[in-house]
Length: 502
Ligand SMILES: Cc1cc2nc3c(=O)[nH]c(=O)nc-3n(C[C@H](O)[C@H](O)[C@H](O)COP(=O)(O)OP(=O)(O)OC[C@H]3O[C@@H](n4cnc5c(N)ncnc54)[C@H](O)[C@@H]3O)c2cc1C
Ligand SMILES: *[C@@H]1O[C@H](CO)[C@@H](O)[C@H](O)[C@H]1NC(C)=O
Ligand SMILES: *[C@@H]1O[C@H](CO)[C@@H](O)[C@H](O)[C@H]1NC(C)=O
Ligand SMILES: *[C@@H]1O[C@H](CO)[C@@H](O)[C@H](O)[C@H]1NC(C)=O
Image 1: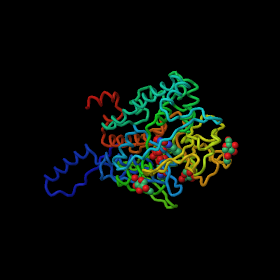
Image 2: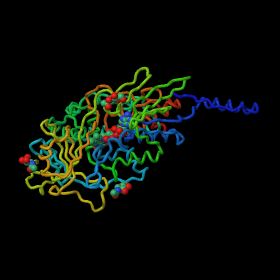
Image 3: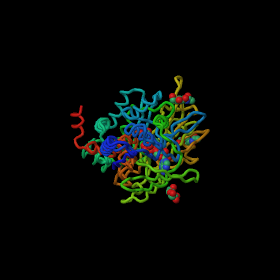
Image 4: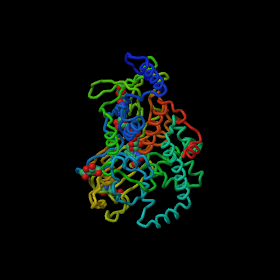
């Protein structure tokens, strides 16, 4: 909570000065000074964005230290093949992801030129749905196969998106939420809350979407998006399906540039170290957090007025011990889902997908259905992060760079099945997103007075923009709590309030 900072007055020369000083002091008690030092744990998009938003709120005099144990960018990352970089983590951003759009503009970055390619869905034996060059033909095929299901799906996803987009308006007016439930409730009412408890398939079946459409199309999209089945909660599912619906973009030079440039612009101190412990010190009504960290076996610590945790707190991820907190602060609930990304430079085995002549294989992307016998989730012919004007996508008969997402690392046999031959394979193992269903509770955002947990939002849905939305929410929440603007926290009927404030 707000900690009034007493003004130290020097021995005054006259009564006037003393009185004046007293007046300043009483003013100062009404508006406490901003925090002096804030620590952010994690320099992924969540941590980088929160550093930026905190500075926007509290002003440039606040010192912001960002601790990162790995690389800036976190799950936004690249690997290098033949001296060109390729995304191996999060690859695409939706056009309606407004915080990401703002960052790119603010930082003078560019949208990467899009090289279109067609997709198909593979069930382990054959391609069950193939995109064509003809927009109308695609629609016709979907209609032929699945009837009105496609339309119902689109309307459902659009409704969720439209309600979700209210967050940008609320945030522009400075409103914050102290729990993920409050945030969702204010956007989509009890319907959003129930979408956290019900599965995608249940929700879609109720809308009249057919089981066949769910098994063929939805299952493949969710397997690509979250590596998980149609039993995941409807809210996470809707966000993932929205992302699959056209209008996606990426950042020229790599998505991770958004993180590094945000940190540069904020002039945050990036400290290359792993935070191991956070200890609470409360003396004389003043709360300080001691952040203990280590790098190359060297231990050190520092004191902060405020701490933002911008990494999942699970042992295999954040692995931070909290001391002296009552009630205790612990590990996050549930577990994280394992995904392996393999970036492979080689020749696709188009025969495996039923195309003995690779020249005739027209797809840039293959999505797998939920067939447990299938050893991969998706396969994409990918372009480098810098796309020059003359760039063209490699043809399937040429050596190309492919990204395969799978649950387990691909073994030699599996590589030989997917590729006629290959030059290189680079694997990155991710604890990629929550294992939805491994916990029924969403962790809190407020862990203590001025200690916040940004990544709890991932239990509603995990995406680059969700982390950016959570970053803005945490910065506003921290600010509103510090200065006691309680009328800006967890307000009801915000749509109405925002309208009348215009
Ligand atoms: C393969 C893959 C594909 C994806 N595809 C997409 C996509 O297409 N679109 C999309 O929107 N989302 C996608 N996502 C999800 C998206 O990448 C994440 O939701 C988002 O990047 C999370 O960002 P974050 O900053 O919250 O967490 P992270 O990026 O995980 O950042 C946390 C950071 O904290 C650091 N850290 C952890 N513990 C400590 C510690 N104790 N001390 C110091 N530092 C610590 C970590 O090293 C890490 O850098 C994908 C994810 C993966 C893995
Ligand atoms: C890639 O793009 C980024 C951003 O525009 C630029 O800074 C970088 O120099 C480019 N790299 C190459 C190798 O062209
Ligand atoms: C978590 O940290 C503790 C102590 O810092 C360490 O002993 C343990 O091995 C770590 N766990 C993981 C999974 O890294
Ligand atoms: C390619 O796929 C075909 C058909 O599934 C398979 O018989 C063959 O072993 C695969 N591998 C290579 C290297 O051709």
